[in-house]
Length: 299
Image 1: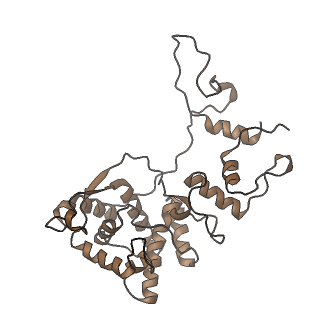
Image 2: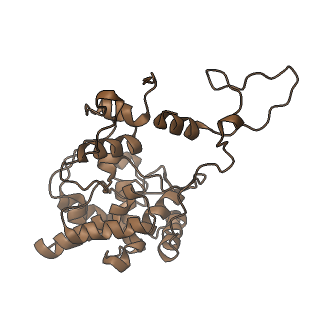
Image 3: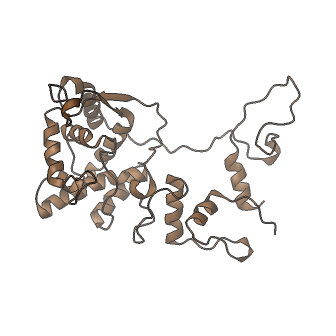
């Protein structure tokens, strides 16, 4: 048997994670939860990026904290929307109480996150109002509104996650609905504002406590309908009332050559070769998936 000098992406991911992935004779051993977790991290966050997932986390669960931010399978051009947050530094605050310079957010990505929340309503996810979502964006400054993980150990929360994934939403984003559910459940159990538990009960890196986070959210509410934030509010309201369904996951190029006899003549760097000067070159299709499949099969 000839052993190829090239490593597959899976082999590189497992090798960097320090997990044995080859048996004697070059056979791949049966997959394990550790292997699945490592592959999930590598496939969505690059080789070695992100924290290692807890050992008891189900193999089908993905979260931004461990697997990176979702792509939503949307290949849309960025759609920036400017908005003005409440000023907290006097010299950078206008007389109206807003920051002197605007912040910016991608409307398409924001719509994607809100659509995940809306999809979870029928599964028990409490719905945040457009005003609350806007105030959260003012505070967090990110389209994911601060979401990083959810309580997969709660059966209901895990069930919500899996149902949203079944609808076709990106696994790394589906937990957004579950996290909202978690925050409201803790508020019912321990009392207080759900935003307190969205933030967490500890102290942040900037020395802010959860009660201070809740107060900041309340302070932000008065600027939601400021004229300078009209475009942002309209964007969030439209996303809330008209959520977008998940698009189909992209499939491989149907025109990619499947027969090795049809493969274009390329040199070692993948560049077209063997053409005479002045000759025409036919459109080149990505055949990387074909080459990887041939490598895996060993044929």
